[in-house]
View (cartoon, rainbow over the protein chains, first blue to last red):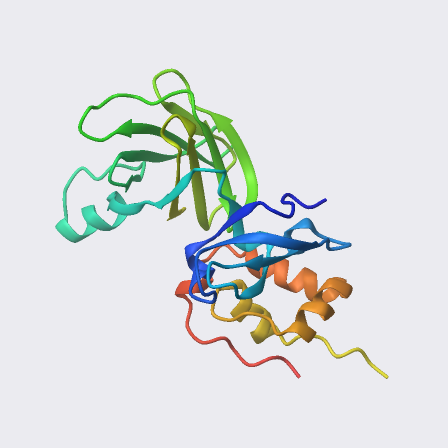
Length: 185
Length: 60
């Protein structure tokens, strides 16, 4: 079953955006794949009126009146601590994803089952305020792996997280914003 | 006559965001579970393909 319908506005993941004239387009038609939803194909119209196809694994929805911001990795303890040869390096890697308005702090832990777990928190820059509750999605490319809601304190958690490159999508409807960040386990 | 599948290196290029399928390749993908399985495996590979070097040649 296809996730998107004609008229939806889709945002092309940064990894694939250089292959298209713009990073957002409007769905004009849908070609549902008979085997895997990840390969549903969407014909997108861009602001220059050009049309190109994108697969479902390449795109996320951009809700009406919402802006998508790409978060930068401004701190990753696995690289920063190694570069500074700091002592007392934590066994739990920490990552900070940053946008102009919000930071996403992420800690990667080993769960009870041995699989990685992610604990995170969404913070508003400059105020230290928590923004909650928020829907947080964990994606491989644009394929949804898990979704959760943050707690009142802005904390969220994912268990049994697969290794490899991951995307995290934080929906902040109060600010007509969604934040997409990429990191690796 | 055998089916002509999309080459592994081409599937890897698409999975890593280095290329887009041409129309005939996309049509083949929608009809071919074999190519889909390979592409899906590349998409779920643990390492970040976008950081990987050039794809190896296809097996004959």
